[in-house]
Image (cartoon, rainbow, N blue to C red; front, side):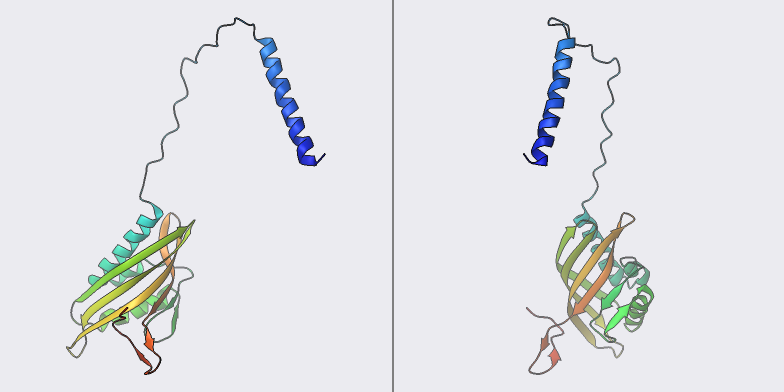
Length: 191
């Protein structure tokens, strides 16, 4: 007989003895025990808040609003201060840390004298505990320093982490497809 079988039999025997003792101590025609005068209050229901996925979608909406407002502080509020790593679409190849990426955004916003029109589409987020990942298409229109209209459509993959009850981007990869025959990037990232 296995240990688990013996353990199960022993537990079953002990429960059976406890039930038998309770039944033996209760007279056959005894009235049920009265209900307590003050029943325990039901546990307070946890207020329903937005789902983790909805919180991340709100974070991305805040990012978009910050980009359209050219507000680097609002943009960077979406990123984790600790452990941030980014592959951006423009050189240098990578940004390590919050301060480095903030400088990249400050330089980008400073190089666009007019308004920016930023739009995110195809956002898809998957949450797994306190970590999530998502991807989107991001389309930016602006006036370049020389006065000409410019547009860039990029593919973005983000990794999010929830810490202190708040979601932040901890890793990001921004890219455009490249035509390997011409070595030119598709800056409008057409499907």
